[in-house]
Length: 67
Image 1 (cartoon, rainbow, N blue to C red):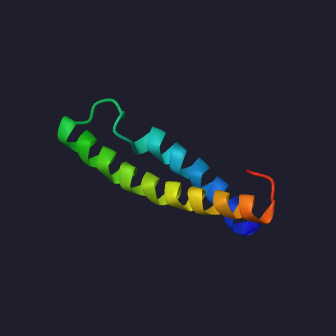
Image 2 (image 1 turned 45 degrees about the vertical axis):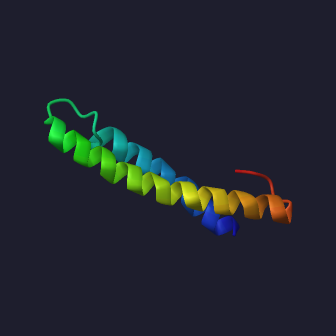
């Protein structure tokens, strides 16, 4: 489980960098493209949020420190 948590931490860091670089707030893109990007990133965020909640519950269950 610890490896999965470490992978998630790295994945979230990469996801955040990708969001800043290619997300809906990039200057000069059309509103339609920004909306599409927002929806795409929201779906990806929800996947990571579910993993976080699952791993956090496991950390609590097994008495591991929260990361």
